[in-house]
Image (cartoon, rainbow, N blue to C red):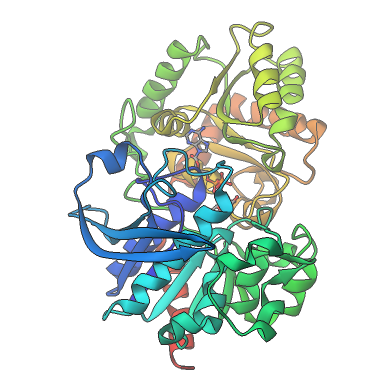
Length: 471
Ligand code: ADP
Ligand code: GLC
């Protein structure tokens, strides 16, 4: 089967969060099951593309309102990633360093989607399945079915995966002229609340809709940032498939980003070396349990609670806390300002640092995830694989992947995204840490949990097959 994944992010080329990790791993596992899965992303102007060898395989033009853009499709040569990568290069529109946050985001995403379709509709090698990820690609299923220009693509099954329904990419109808010609009787298929809503469009028009954990699929019917009614109405074509992790990239035994590699039998000494590096570099002390948070500093992740959690916990208990993240400036500022108060027990690193994140997963004792919304969450699965015990709010995919020690499980869970709840979980974690033999037993247990993509990659393939049979 020829599968084309369409996404804005893809690890290791361009990563902001978990979307990149998923798109950078799922096709590899699909290929290992005997298929031909590739990825198409924008050409981002960054270190990876600067150093990569790319060949131009197609040139074309696309109309975006009154502007005519030339675009090219570049193919990554010998990427050694386990899948083919194509990049849409649109000079001055797509080739930027930052993935998101540009004022012309609407133009960028629509131009990207049109270029993808323009290219594949002219290609001899049309994919059997087009798999779109998140709202940036949500107009594709509509354009493939209803735009006059892409009739060649009408019968290709489309899958739309919601990685996060908080972001929907809405635009007003004055931008409708960016879309290609289509039968205007179909305009309702673009609409939600009198706006063009690319996430809703993806849900309405894709042949099948998936999200990244079974529990988030259920939650979306009650809470989907305004789209809950749509998700209830479309529930028959929706399914939750739990994300996996790339166990080759994320392997403590071989991970080149770690200070010291380790496996089950060398867990204690290996993790100690990584913890020591963290403590030396962030002025923390190695004897105390180290609690960490890694992620986007936004309310969705419960990051606005962190400052209070830190102040409360460090006033009442003797632990270390390390934060790695960036996002909301007020949250960043609050976290920075706490440093002075707890100089030898708390550190924050504002920014994005892939290597540091790996060292934290391998050196921290506990990982905090007080998320309000967590469609799947990969951090807890990385933590498990590296022997760090996750402390999570029971929501979305966190509920599907972490079971509380009190229920015979291996993590610490709480129900509310509240400071009090998290602080209580921290106290439970300290009690666990104090019983070193139980703590180490648990670390061994979590490192053995298999969250690799094998099962879920097959679930996607089964879904694709069921659609191909409908054609
Ligand atoms: P989301 O996609 O909502 O941000 P996920 O848990 O799915 O959450 O994935 C987050 C990914 O981004 C993980 O690979 C995590 O390690 C990484 N990450 C998040 N913030 C940072 C950061 N500041 N530095 C390095 N890696 C980060
Ligand atoms: C989104 C979600 C996150 C999920 C990731 C990958 O960014 O916020 O929970 O793990 O996508 O699917």
